[in-house]
Amino acid sequence: MSPLEHGEVYVLEDGGEADLDLGNYERFLDLTLTSGHSLTSGKVYEKVIKRERTGHYLGKTVQMVPHVTDAIQEWISDIASKPVDKSGLRPEVCLVELGGTVGDIESAVYLEAMQQFLFKVGRENFLMIHLGMVPVIGATGEPKTKPCQHSVKLLREAGLKPDLLMCRSEVPVDEATRRKLSLFCQVAPEHVISMHDVSNLYQVPLLLAEQSVGSIICNHLGLSTSRVARSLSFGCQKDAETMPTQRLADWKVLSDRTDSYIGNVTIALVGKYMGNPDAYASVVKALQHAALEANLHLKLEWVDSSMLEPNAQQQEPKKYEAAWSALKSAQGVLVPGGFGTRGIEGKVATAGYCRSAKKPYLGICVGLQTAVIEFARSELGWEGANSTEFDEATPHPVVEFLPEASSTMMGGTMRLGSRATIIRDPQSLACKLYGGKPVIYERHRHRYEVTASCVPAFEAKGLHFTGQDDRAQRMELCELRDHPFFVACQFHPEFQSRPAKPGPLFLGLVLAATGQLEKRLEADGGVLKVGAGFQKAC
Image (cartoon, rainbow, N blue to C red; front, side, top):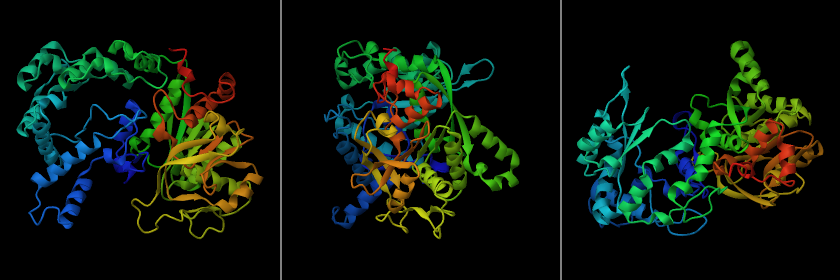
């Protein structure tokens, strides 16, 4: 999938590759989803075709209704019973996001499946929430309800009636607009919910709570509100029996801190997919989580790695100067993952600059590989050192193709999902950042790795590989000892970062960039206690 077209590919714990929206659900709800929680038309059609090939339908004509719609309902029923958190308990509510817009041809079969599903389970077990647009037009600021009315009309034609109407608007939906939508959409006035713009994302749960959305849902589904108690990781509110508004205290801490911070931190994100910010959605969120924990406002400098390369100086000198200026002025630098040769030499140059200038550096996936390439060229004197991904004829292949990957089948052939990393050195910065844990689990997505035979030469010159896989064959973490913060990882730590529990490497980068890391480690007892920055707020 092209990051420029689709945004990032979000990696789930079981190795499933999914839309970035699943990352939003995991982050906000602190869940661990699987590939089964991503239902696509391709998966459904594949399932139906396999059934037909094995004689499941006994020669009947396979149709969208009932065969495809039945497959959709079966998928939802099956996945709804799977545990999604550490409790191991069966979920009480299954949230199904039907993407796209009502009226799209791609959504038609899913709408049909949902109205059949409603008939099977009964309205008391089925709640339909419709998200509609209420734009504000002209200088008078008059809200227009027609777009929302028409989308509800199309939804009703598909056999579905919304129980809750969420109205996206720039400004709060006033009482007159609420009554008008209630009348024309046949939704109770108190079920017309204003989803207006707020200053930060963490205010949204508070906004929903103010309008009693939780109580409305629980009453409709026959659930007890006293049993609903999902607080955040730092847990400012521990009592599960307190009022729902009090249990939202953790979200209020995040919201308040987002709007009132004690300082700024500027991080340069050096990437190659600058045309679509969603290409690095999880990385940006992880940096925001880290800045929030440190009570800092994150300022991102987007740097196109292609503009850092020598040829850019001749072809586009102004962009070249601007890119290097942004890189040098940043307090810390992050090089995220990516594929292909374009912009790679710019990432190599970034690693070299951060290494020599003692600037805090965090490399992820290819960010580790380019750091290794730069070190081999500069410190080991291996001229032409490279990855076989970028130069198959390199005289010094310091990064090579995974033996189990496929060079012809590009899809589904990478090393994916959660894997163990053994931290070799208890005195390493990586070990301190991960709270002194000897074993950590992070998610992966790559098909190239550091050449193991080159590791002794690197370590002899000061680049230490402090994390390896459980067979001590793959290099997972590396760092420089004589540097304030130069850490790189083969895995993708951004996928497990949470608002109240940021990824340790991101928090380390933010703290190092503002000169607070050593002080924080000392205050935390020698190892980083992620989330401790929120304790004063509690």
